[in-house]
Image 1: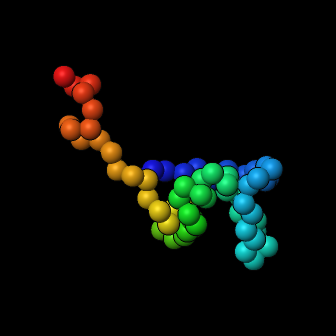
Image 2: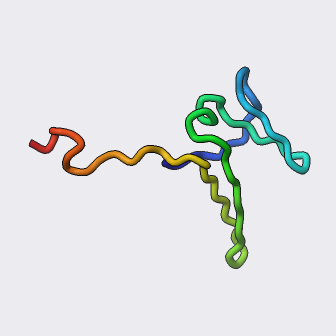
Length: 71
């Protein structure tokens, strides 16, 4: 599962956390499904990379026994 980071303001019902003057907003339904999120960063050369991970992972599905679409 991947998540996008966007610059946006909170909508009604969103969860808002503030750390060091920066507000982080997440849809309440995503928070209920995946729990708290961890935002980490690292630098490689002159580039800064961000990673957003959820505390709970999405259920894994798939594989040949999960559906009949292959015949």
